[in-house]
Image 1 (cartoon, rainbow, N blue to C red):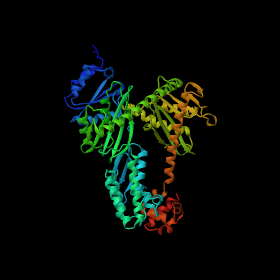
Image 2 (cartoon, one colour):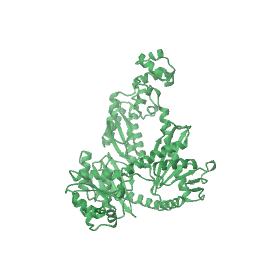
Image 3 (cartoon, rainbow, N blue to C red):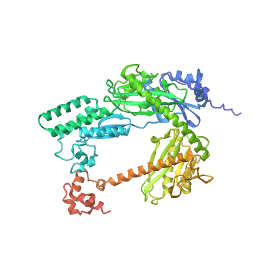
Image 4 (cartoon, rainbow, N blue to C red):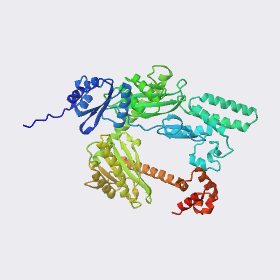
Length: 620
């Protein structure tokens, strides 16, 4: 007699069954839906007690009831402390982007200023990403514009080099920056002594660490002394440096008097959306602000949104000594402990109620309110346009993610594919991708082959991520810059990878590339045009033009890198010193290429074996 199998447990029954095997210890839990989709990630001081609350359904909102009903499995990770659980939870939310969590969507790293210390002559430069190089890092700056402006001003004030090591090592005379008094010219002997340059470096580091008044007072004293000694040229140079430093502090708005280092967070929520404005204060100066629009639900409280946002925000960003908030958060003490552990020093989190700190928060809150108002106004108009796009291509609903692809090359050289992403929030530039064309069997200028390679690489990755249960960013619509041939190439790749359920359309330029006369190609449909004044047409033109702009920019960058490459860099045994000697002897790489072995042997540091290797390299 066959035994009847009972159906698998789901929803609240499954959660209740899981609690029987849970320990009363801190940890992180994941709720999984059909097909392994991660619905929610949470942390708890006691996994057993927290998870049991979902099964009991006490005072659950409709959203939580829906989440529980969709649950098909759960996974657990125990930790030693609740602090560890908080850090792990933030990491998982940021990586998996669960459907029912508050999710920080824009996690692009910030630009910083860096004084490199791994070279005898330190360099000041812009930096983004992990701190892998030896040096002093200062930031974050809220925008590339802010860090570029500050770096340029610091160069005027402290005369530090910004050139790369390879350029520095091959200079025989100072560059233009030295001529316009933005660099002391340490690349050439006699311009500045090592001792003086080291003093410039330390003054710059001190200024960026908040000791601006001390640095400026010292420079003012030196200027006065130089003027009294009749060294008027030196006094004028010092005067110019003081003016440059003053311009930094004057250009920064709302500089606080009592706050040296802090991040200010202010949240405004309205209409089921939220905006978090973050202001960065370092060295007593305002280094800019950035607006974030986390994915939230209308039932989330402002305190809970800010609580979740903070944990994810500092996953890969420097932690300041002070964090000012517009709303107190439930896990404030736990966040303090976790961030102090990450920073290596104490971090204070405060929701101020009076004084200068409160004024800073109120200023950020005003910016958050205004930014969200603009966004809600824009999203209303964008929603209507996206609905028209959905009707144009027969989509089931308004597209949340549109991917647009284009290629750029000159005669097949430096070929680059580009992908841009757009949706209800506009262009999602942190999702843009460029693809250096790698296929060696393509005929130069084969646009169809290039498009096949780009789509195969993009959607192979999507398939792999979906198989691993990770968030894949599946598009609701794919637009290809091209006509019937490009569309056929794209559809072939999509069918090959098993993602042919994603709608794909081609956008062909009109005769003489006239805007407004574009023809659209869509499977199982005759080519068509849109009304000349259709908002959907204008929107699709913007998408295509943005993809074209991004592709051309990526191509130009790659071409510029190739143009700057010196063939001497590719020859084994030719380092910076020998490279400089060869260029000094023959004037250019082309001159080196024309030289015979006996001529190469006359160059200092070049032996017989190296001379033959150089000679052979240029005669491959």
